[in-house]
Length: 243
Image (cartoon, rainbow, N blue to C red; front, side, top):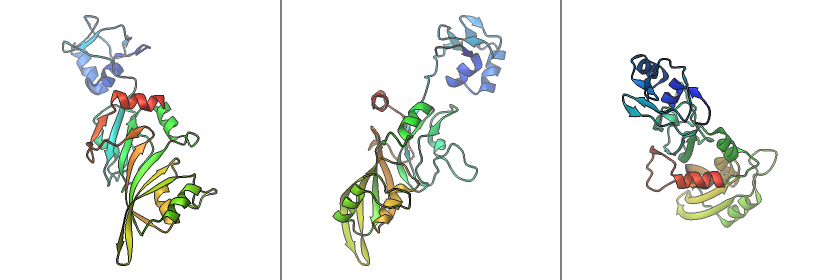
């Protein structure tokens, strides 16, 4: 915390309560600054000040928070929605300003980064950066080597230009009566609306299940269950910021 901030904001960001709850603590004389009872919620403090609540020291909250969510199907990638459950309901933080970096469709599962670091989010989402995203997809139809080559060249999904080159890997195919089924891995470096689904449709296949496995240097941990959300590890954050 390099600059002076309001005491109530400092405490709220540090998890001591909501702004209104913190103000009540201050009014009751429960908050101490440098050994003296704080009088006003708007009192300015800096990182040199020692703050405690009910006798327990309060450390400054980190400048930004970063969470890794294994998004389940059935919720939308938004901060709020009057009709739908949002991904924010899975985040173990009351901090204001958190948001999902990019979006996954309501029926799509997998890795989603949640943060309040706008600059980092811009780096990951900027079309100029070409950040790779890998998806596991189950599709109707038999994916072929011709499809693999088509993805490498770019396919027509109804935009002005073909998609940028993408890597399609065939994991499994299964012939069935009336067609068949394939499981594939697709790595793209764009983020157009419904892009994976539209790309598979361009080669005559329909996505029936979709899960994001990775985004940039972040990979969905195998032990993170659907609906689970945890802070990034220091190693993950270092990779993310040094990319």
